[in-house]
Length: 402
Image (cartoon, rainbow, N blue to C red; front, top):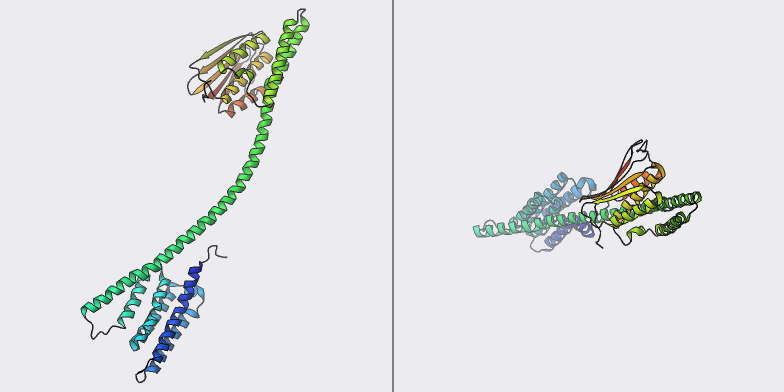
């Protein structure tokens, strides 16, 4: 499986440098040693032998091993210890090989980030300065000076190794976070497209339901009223009054049809708030049906949001239409109650009642859908032969006063 976050260019370069530094420092030390005049007797063979030992150790414990083996902590520790030991032997034989000791600082990075990084740097510093110090002439001040250098060098180089690892870890996390963010953005884009499609489909369905409700609440009711008045006109000689009412209903129905298509509120609410619109509705309904309708408004009247007022008006309109068509009532009552947090609408009649209030037809279903759309609810109580009570509850969301 490919690493989604491969090492950076700096990491790869440092790893390559750390691999070849022991070879370079060993070769440089050997060349300078062999080129130096005044070689002691037997010094060159001893130098070549120790150098061959150091080279064999580097190759055998690092270069020839598979990558997964050389990364093991035990193998890393063994390799570092051997390099430092051969560097100490070579430095004691010839101080010029302190150059080879420098490779220990690079190898210490293999222990990062851990306390062993500082131990590796400290051990390298001790070998580096200890092999060059003339212990026969060493004074307490000189030893303290070298120990101070070892301490500062350990903190600086060891801390640098650990800081570099930490920075790389943060960069890995940053790259992972960016990758996760890009994935999330792509998923969000796909989800957004799905939501847009669903919203479009839901909008089409809502619009169809709205148009069905508007046709039922306006055109169907208006046509029913027109038919009622025309039939009444056929039964009497003086049909002028019925014909005039039928004409008014036809004009109102046409106006409501146009407003429904444009998704506007009922014309009764254009220049008045809900209580006045309810009064107008009740007066017109009484004139059309001949049934006495008592209207009562209780509580402190507040201007409600247009959506709330339109919903309550349409519910009252539908409930009264049901009373006119099905109840056979002689009296009815409409109460609009402002109770603070909610507004209640109650419509009662003394008609035949409903045998199964829970079933209902399109009218009750339409009222429930309207009320659910504004966070309201509908309750129907009815006893056969004793009338029906319809109660609507909506939140009292206020609109701008006007």
